[in-house]
Length: 42
Image (tube, rainbow, N blue to C red; front, side):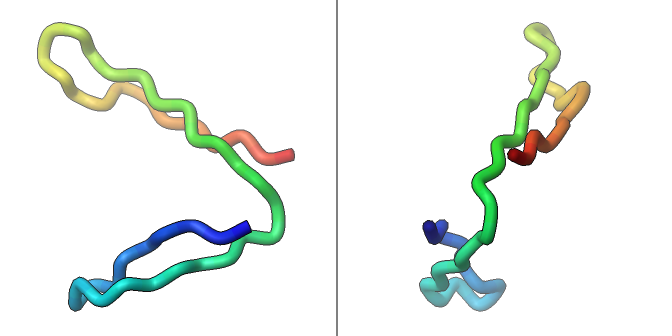
């Protein structure tokens, strides 16, 4: 499995990850600020 991960100079780059993962993010509903982020690996 590979994911689009653009390089700092805006070139197209695809990166392969060994294991699937998900990042759970919680945002403040009023300000839109990120309150917490946690990766989940399997």
